[in-house]
Amino acid sequence: MDNKNFNADQSIELIQRMIRDTRRNLSSGSSNLFILWGYLLAATAVGIFLLLTFTESRAWQWLWLPALAAGWAATWWYNRRRATQVKSYTDRLLEQVWGCIAGLAAFSTFVICMEREWPVDPLFPVLLLISAGLFISGTVIHNKYMYYVSCFLLPVAFGIIRESWINVNPDGNLIQFAVAVLVGLTGSGYALKRQVKRDAAEASENR
Image 1 (tube, rainbow, N blue to C red):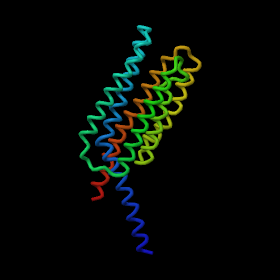
Image 2: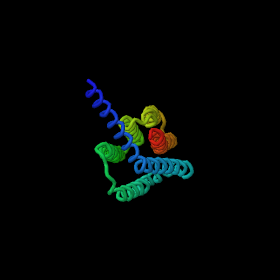
Image 3: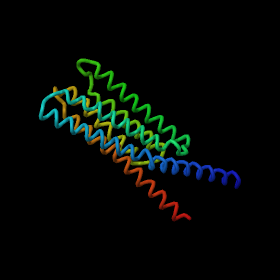
Image 4: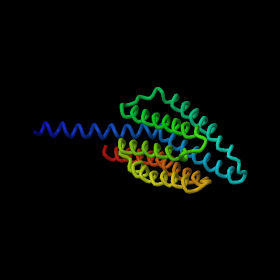
């Protein structure tokens, strides 16, 4: 019995250590990407909103393309610098999850924009996918901020689609989207950094 309890305690400690290691690895890399993408998407959304307001030219919507291209280039460069870092199965899993989310967001936006009249605002599925990614990440690494903020993004996303249906010119969705990605992505990046610092402080106290 004692041996079984000891092995169970060891297993729990191993799992907790793996979660802490994954948080630390995410903090050293992905937290910066969360912050980068949060600021980039928010700044682009606000910029497009202001240009649409003052010029009334819908062509400014194409500014999303160079902004996303810059984000992808920065992400590729940043990940290439971290290519030599040893990654656990959980690290690779979360990277694949966010890779799938990015691909689905791009695909859904492309499909919607191919229609002459958009059936829904492209920001709606993008925000839903970001919410799903934060929920999965928060659950895997036990980050409460990510978990709860993913729930906050859901009503914002449905608020965007509601505005798209009842408002002929729902440019205000861009501001809602900007606030959502700042709170969701950028906030998660900073929250992850704070959690890793707490883990390090607790580990030093236990020594």
